[in-house]
Image (tube, rainbow, N blue to C red; front, side, top):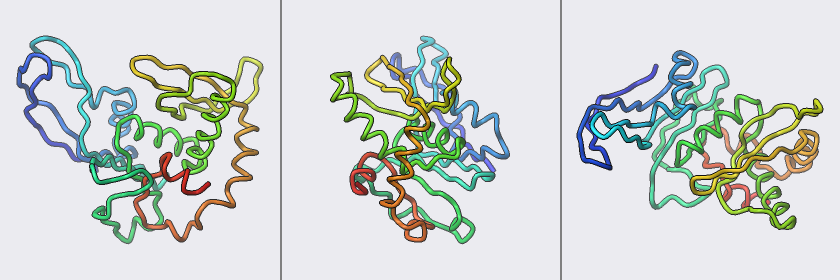
Length: 215
């Protein structure tokens, strides 16, 4: 089930205080409307009733997809480095078959949701993003910023492709790669990935640090 609480939050612009709903956990299977609000940004957007300005409010949140057996937890821990996950997250017996991930932002959570809903392996995606960034740099293209998976789709010519977005400041740029290129890369990189049994029942932070450790 999804769990929430009412909290009083002060507007960062004018200081006006008002009640805001904070969701501690979201069950995307039982409450798909909450999944939609999370993906659109509505769930974590505070709009001041006084000055009408909006701002993102991010807090610890557990995302649960029962159908795909996925849990993703937004956690904040200053001592946490890339590639690591909090030791304190409990793992119950029923979660041993789940894919368990820890992230540090809503963008990361949204990306994980999109990856798993497409049936992709986020570990491969993170390694592929390193290769993509290096290719962008070799082609003298902008590579600084947060590189995120965004979708799988088709080009105007009907070719299957995998799309990414590069977030930098207030702007962003998007580009796509033929899905066949990604699949060839994935086939060759899977042998380097840890054995599934080694990671079963563990909260993993699969990010750039995790990818660099693998390669």
